Length: 201
Image (cartoon, rainbow, N blue to C red):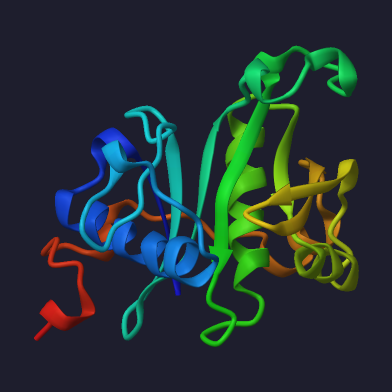
């Protein structure tokens, strides 16, 4: 399993299409999210936050293709009033969205993706991450001693309960497990840019 780090503007078109299909299968078909008509593409999921400068972490397995992802972008004040919880300027906060992983392939893959997210945030001068978390994700964080702090509770996303959580960048337990690992560029992992597992010889 390798974690690809890339901005949307630098993502090869074949990888972008594969990511759209993965997001569709996970969030639209799996979780039942609706897609605005103007953003619809056949069998793919995109949204209005897919700007060229957002950063993606994509988990890639040589036999299974894309197995997980996370999108990192500047926190936007429209999402939540800063005065309600943010102790630092919003320019120092990243939102981690579209956070998912195929537990059937690797039941600790969410931790691997999260580690690379906090490492990248730290290198970028970010104070902490904010993310939506399902009850199952919160239980996983507790089980593996991931540091996090609930900011809001009882939010409903597509009829499912979620919380907004603050994730500090200091994560000793994740460091013990993943320290020394690195992210890869798309070209390192997919030199032919023939992304789909079905396209591989």
